[in-house]
Length: 242
Image (cartoon, rainbow, N blue to C red; front, side, top):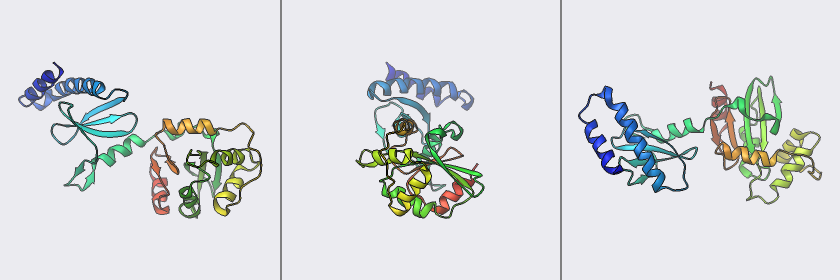
């Protein structure tokens, strides 16, 4: 019944004025969402939207996973949708929109901060003390960037067995930023037991809620989340973005 209903709606849509399309589209999408929910048990169908490609719909699963489906919900397409005229990936653009978060709502008390210059710009970084790309970020990408306040959220990954211990020791140090910089820039680990109250577990849950699964991950004031040790020039551009 669902399939016949969707088909009738799509056929009818071809014969009505554009001003009447929204109601039919809403009805079609609602039914398509119901079908996909049954076809993909255990996965949250967050939203379904039309795309510039006729008969193809964008499906957001969970917080940020983007796939595409046909009007009948019989197939799933994974990959980028490219606008050949504009030579741009519509999937990447949409992914960037979904990746955004509200910087002002970050629990900054779960991070330690470093103020450079006047500290007027802000940046949050989720980082692992044993992550080689995190060290590259600190040593190369962030080197020389000034007039910024950097909030570091310790996020030890399970693939690094000693990262959790190091994260706790760093958090418990009298000078957290100094302990962090000494390790990341000079490979000098602070001493201590790391037995004070720390936000490591909270940070892991926070990262998961933001869709962050790896390190380093950078969050800019604009709300954009970017993964990896991106170049210094790109960081400067993103720090300047509204």
